Image 1 (cartoon, helix red, strand yellow):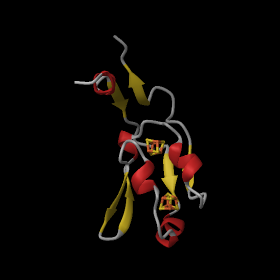
Image 2 (cartoon, helix red, strand yellow):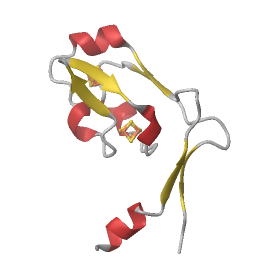
Image 3 (cartoon, helix red, strand yellow):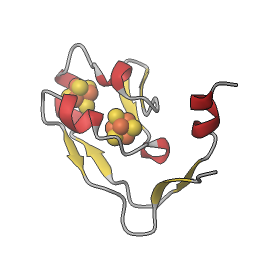
Image 4 (cartoon, helix red, strand yellow):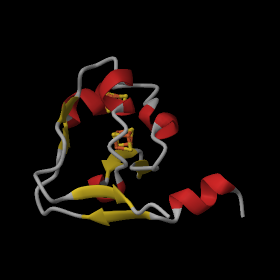
Length: 90
Ligand code: SF4
Ligand code: SF4
């Protein structure tokens, strides 16, 4: 197993019931290329029956979608205190 894979195994999620990222579904429906399907390192975006689905639970809080969505379709914030991703070192 690579060093990178071992580090990924130390990632833990404490999932809040309140999504910290919310999509504008109308903007996403009109977005033809849907690049978020490819740039999210956690695979939070998927297509189901040709409709974009988003699951915030596995989000790594990297901010890529916030920067890369050219349509400004995301309301993005960090999870509320005590929730979200954490990395166990060592
Ligand atoms: S790139 Fe932005 S607008 Fe397009 S589908 Fe993804 S989140 Fe929606
Ligand atoms: S912040 Fe990063 S990991 Fe989370 S949904 Fe956006 S691109 Fe994916």
